[in-house]
Image 1: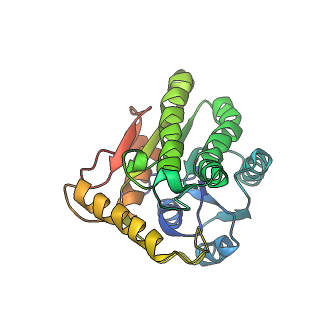
Image 2 (image 1 turned 90 degrees about the vertical axis):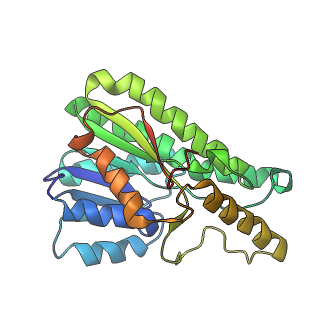
Amino acid sequence: MNRFHNQVALVTGAAQGIGRRVAERLAEEGARVVLVDRSELVFELAAALSPRYPVLALTADLEQYSECSRIMAAAIDHFGRLDILINNVGGTIWAKPFEHYEPAQIEAEVRRSLFPTLWCCHAALPQMLEQGRGAIVNVSSIATRSLNRVPYGAAKGGINALTACLAFETAGRGVRVNATAPGGTEAPPRRIPRNSAEPSTEEQAWYQQIVDQTLDSSLMHRYGSVDEQAAAILFLASDEASYITGTVLPVGGGDQG
């Protein structure tokens, strides 16, 4: 397949997990890919892809608007345009009942899982509107209806609202905005964990409740693969979804989130 021939796609959170697989598949299908992550592991991916595909790797802290603006400018300067934005940064930092969160932890969860998407949409939009063409795919989560991660669920609910509202604003100007809502996903172990602290026995039990609820809520009663998540993201980014905007697509084995 060559769905993205000569299109420029920027993928955030590209160093690991779903983001890495999305970046690999975009490159395999003809895109020129900008790989963005806060970790220097992103340069390892670039080294693996660059002998065959045109890629640009950048490190950035996307919780800061100035960093989002910088990477968009760098991508456009390097490749001349920006056709696709995949907002993949985010993820639960802590897993526990809401009353056990500290205020600083609540803020950190929202900052991690909402602001990078909000900022990157804002920073990318002027270029896409000038081109009269663009596709944005935000990665949300079925955790908007789940337990032991209320701040994360609230942040992902914000992404759902952002997706719908921005689609309203841009549909008549050539820019589509959609989201996927992944369910539980089997991915290689994270080389840099989101939370470096060793979980207590109680915290492990709270996390197990999430796993049990995720499996129970899925009609297929299993976790998905990174390829299954990437397939949905790439579909929404492609011209095959040219008549779809403002949609949040659950990818959770029948769990609608």
